[in-house]
Amino acid sequence: GRLREFSPVGLASLLWAFGTARFRSPTLWADAAPIATCQVDRLSPQGMAVLAWAYASAQQPSPELFRALSVAAEARVSEFSAQGLSMLLWAFARLQHPAPALFDAAHARVVPALADFDTQSIVMMSWAFESVAYPAPSLMTAVPARSRMYGGVPPWPA
Image 1 (cartoon, rainbow, N blue to C red):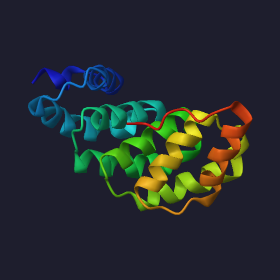
Image 2: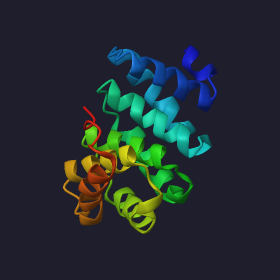
Image 3: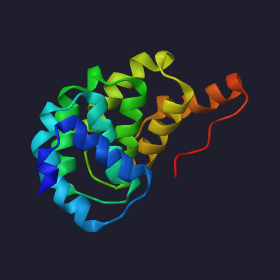
Image 4: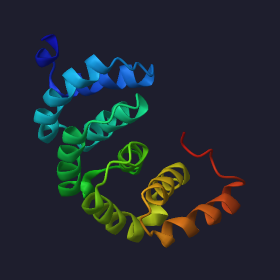
């Protein structure tokens, strides 16, 4: 009941907090999913990334929510920051939610701007593309190149 009282940002933030704590109450996540699904179009790209990350961190798949996130994020992929896009893709890969159109749009956005992305975001995106078996050779070669430049690759996301 009370979850409906949250704004889209408020609900995403609440779920982020529960995801950070790895809170795995199936009831909470299941109750929040239809509400969040209806609010996806009212979230900023960062809000979408935070929401997806929360569900993936808590290991709570929600196919309907992720379908809505995929459509909304694909349409606004150019508005995502490097961190936001890497979080979003990581979440889709972590839950193994198929989103080929989103990954196509993300790949088209990332490859020409690879020099503008930080190493951690490149590593997370590379892991996500690899996890869903999406061919992204430009990302895969960027990881070792960055590693040589900065003396090591950050740990892969869990």
